[in-house]
Image (cartoon, rainbow, N blue to C red):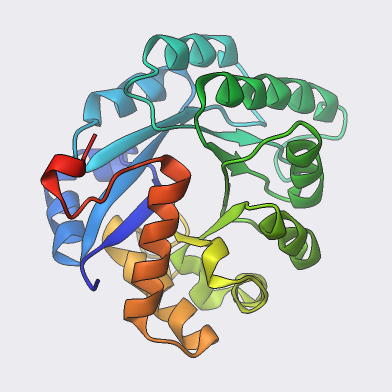
Length: 257
């Protein structure tokens, strides 16, 4: 299973990666990555993400909770391209760059995206910076099921409750320097974990540009913290990704939809 890593969340449309995308993808493949989900944020970025979709690059489309301009366009874009969109998101709540005054508006828009994902039977990719607990509470109260908590930075107790309901938590290379993410991995079962890079952000070093090839840092840290082999981490997170995104086995060409 060494070469079956799925990076469930990256931003390949970012200008720092897009201009040399061939090299970025080749490096990822050489590192054992078999699929990357690139996230479009907002209408224009979502169109750029859709243009990248192929067997290796898949697409999730959403909006930044702290900048909701154009979110209606994104909803319509997802509906029109439902066969090409693998997930709804990132969407959610943000109290880091968002404001308390605008929080109810964030909640209202979040509800629209939760309903959209249910309508289209798509998984949700969740942004919850400084708002992990309220995001989880809203997801649970509104009946969300296939959920990826992207780069979750919140309370581990809330995460454990969400994991018991089937939510998955994707772990970025930033775990190398994050005590919170190390604690999250220690407390959650392997069945609740996924691998992400959030490229070009959340790399193992703050000053170095992140790429999907760095997904291995997440694998290695999970293995170290849980006292298991990297092969076991790769196999489990690969199967978790197939389940949450509804994909067939990527190792079989006829299984790729």
